Length: 245
Length: 245
DNA sequence: TCCGCTATGCGTACAGTGTGCGCATCGAAG
DNA sequence: CTTCGATGCGCACACTGTACGCATAGCGGA
Image 1: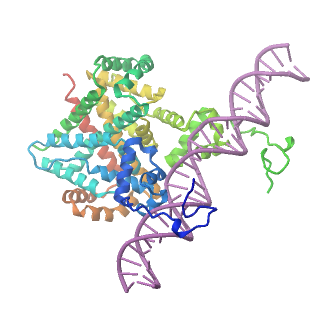
Image 2 (image 1 turned 90 degrees about the vertical axis):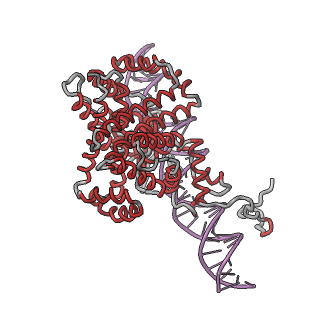
Image 3 (image 1 turned 120 degrees about the horizontal axis):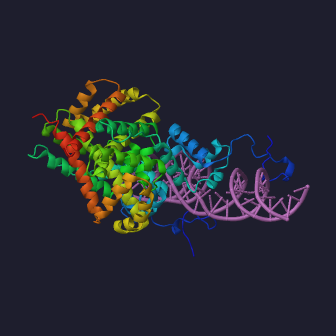
C-alpha cells in the first residue's frame, strides 16, 4: 500500500506526488466547526468530543481547528451560544404574561433536553462568556418581565430560571444516564424498579413516595412533563403575589 | 543524586537497598482517599484532581488507589455522598414548616458553595448512585414535607430543590470563576463592570437592569444571599397555596 | 519456626487528551 | 513574477485514567 503524504519518512519527497489540498470539501470555518461540534455533542455526549475526532470529522487535522478557535473551552462557549438561539421567548407586552413565561421556560427546557450537554457547560463556565444569542435571550426575558409589571424584573427572572435550570439539569442528567444504557426510558425504569424498591425499603417516607409514584404506571416522559409544569406553576403563583395590583 | 527504587534500569537490583514501605503513614484506606480527594477538590477545583496527584498526596502511587476504589467516577460519587452528610434538615413535625424548609434549603446552598464541584458532579452523574447520606437527606426531606401536610410531598420537594439546585449551580460557577481570577468577589465585580456596561449598552432592558443593580453598591455576597432568599420565598409562597387548609 | 495465602502497593505500559511550534502550501496583492 | 499573510498539518510534550503483573507484608495453620 503506497502513501503519498509529504512527510513520509523513507521515500524521497517529491513535489508532484503531493495531494491537492481537498478541492471539494467546503473548507474549515468557525461556523462549520461549531456546527459539527454540536452534532457530535448531541450524538455521543460531552466526553466523546475531542479535538482530534472533531478534526477527523471535518477532514482536517486536530490542530487545524486552532486557526479558527482559540481553545476547546472557547469552542464550548461558542456551541452554547449557538444553541441558545433555539430558545424562544415570546414578545413582551402580550395580554397573558404567565402564558408567555411558561412558553419561554418550556422552550429553555426542551432546548436543554435536546442538547443534554448544555447544562453541564453552563454549570462549568457560569455565564462568563456572554455570546450574542444568550444576550438577546436575556434581553427578551427582561422585556417580558418588565412589561408584565414586575418592579424588579431581574429578581423574578432569577427565581423562575433558577428553577428551570435546576429541573432541566436534573432531567438532562437522567436522560444521559438512560441513553448510555442504550434503552428507552420505560425499559430503564422497569429495570431500575426492583433496586429502587429495595434501597428505599429502609426509609419510611421514601418508600411511601416511591409506592405512590410507581402506582401511576404512566409514560415516564409524560410524568416529567407534568412535574416540570407543576413546579413552574408554583413559582409563577408565588411571583403573581408580588405583582403590584 | 542516587536513587534506590527497585526497578531502576541500570543498577543491580539488590534486596537490601530497598526502602521499607513507609512505616509511619496511616496506610491507605477508602475513607482517607475520599477525605483527601475532597480536600483537593475544595482547594483547587474539579479539574485539578487527578489520580496521580491524589496518590502523591497520600504518599502512594496512583494505581494503588484502585485497590480501594473501582474508578475515578466511583470516587467522585463517594465524595458527593460524603459532603451530602453536611446538609442539615430539621426534624419533621415542627410548628413552622417554612422555617424548616428554609433551613434545609440554606444548608444545601452553603454546602454547595463550600464545595463548588458538587453541583458539577450532580449534573453529570444525575443521582444514579444513591449513597446512604444522600438517602437520609432525601428521607428527612420527605418526612418534613409530609408532616407539613403536602398530599404529594415529592412534587413539592422537586419544586423547591430544583430552584435551590439551579441557583446554587449558578452561584458555584460564578464563585469558581472569581476564585480562578485570584481576586475577591468585590474586586472581580469592579473589574468586570465596564465590560458589562459596554456589552449591555445595546440592550435596553438589560442596561436598565444593570443600572439598578449597580446603583446599590453593596457587598456582592450579601446581594446573592438576598437573591436566594427572595426566590426561595417565591417558591414557598406558591407551595403554601397548595396546602390543604 | 516455617509455609502458604491473601490483601495490598507499585512500576510499567497503553491509548488517549489539549495544545505549542514550525514548516509547507495556498490565494491574492503589488 | 515575487512576496506575503492566512491556513493546514505533522510532530512533540506533558498529562490523563487505568489494566496488568510482580513484590511484598502480615497472618492463620502446621
